[in-house]
Length: 591
Image (cartoon, rainbow, N blue to C red; front, side):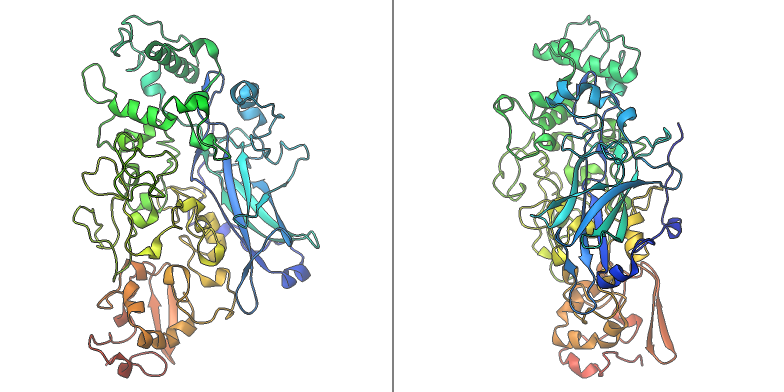
């Protein structure tokens, strides 16, 4: 099969952006909108084979919001009384569209046995279809979630195979807003819906591997075992896992195929209504705890840990999670050389082998207990702990070179990997809420401006379509910082009330008039531009910019430059009485 090589930022200008070219002009003038959205997780995993056992079904989630761009005043996040959203499959550079799943997986052959529900061919567990598989093929309607004021597709049964049989772990869906009054297209956004069936479980569990070897070295397992003789590698390694499970736990799973792991072990990802463990599951540890602890303690025949305690993710996490090719972690954190363990801890920490420290649980209720899978997750604020004035100071924290952000979300030598709570909430999620469920500026979902969990913008390492949505919205890759994305023209007053306390970005009016904000409270400027106004990572330019400061005097900011006050004019003195240094236009001429 051909391997999908999608686009990078260099190729993005070839994509269409903004309102759909087929939009009705009169409607667009009356109701100009912007669609923002993202996949919820960064990479969903499905199985190549569902005939033996299943951990997760084909299940992807996409969320989106529609922003009405006001000519004056503040924009409005619209609900389903005005617009509706539909999703359709589009092609990516180097890959065909991914519009159907029916002939690409055996999921529907075993769905009723596994999940106890009778699905129509092509139907996902939450009733959504791929566009070409639906009873009425074509663009499909997204569901409005009144609680979050957004649209969602839950449980989309997408696979990593495009419509020509090529491998495509980063397929694209076009989310299009339609006017309910005129039924005309208003705007669209192209989002990546990442999915992979990559797994390296066979590295240990295929017949002859360290976990399926004869003679067996596992405690409680007879030295002579008849391992799977299946010719299909995925079937073989899955059968071996069931054989091993039966031998060690006196179960009869091998003769009960297909098996759903969640029948016995709670899986939060399959608890769609948040009801918690069933009575049967309550008597057993969660699947996450069992799998992570089992592999965290596993040793080979020589007594060595199969997965090194401090091993790189290529030798640990990517042995089960996708993966060496698809790379579940590939966003801004990976661009900054972080690995899974830097946020989540090692296998035993993820498996809840150690009790959480105070503040380690999402809501504080589980401090002192084992970690809850899919709940007690790393926080943004655990590494982004504040600004140049107020941030975490902890002798056991591992700081990055800039001295502001952390390279590890928890204290050094903390076996439980209990993540930090920041003293400054500037970059914190909503209280007691995960990043992917948090809402921020103007009620927009954090992921809609920053990107999906694990693939936060920008993705600087892989040629994938992850960066496409950000480029379509603001014409450059990275976190959404351009106010004009939602605030066209001069509809936004000069202020410092943007996301995380941000001022107008790329706005000549702020360049000319920021002096009044400095005079009123110079701490506002120091927070991001530095205590000595020297510039920090928080004042870094996200794109190249040019500003005319005076007739004939233009300054050029390179992308990545940490903007310091001395770049355009003399730095303000440290002494009080700063107002005396500020002329009416807010600029201090260089001597």
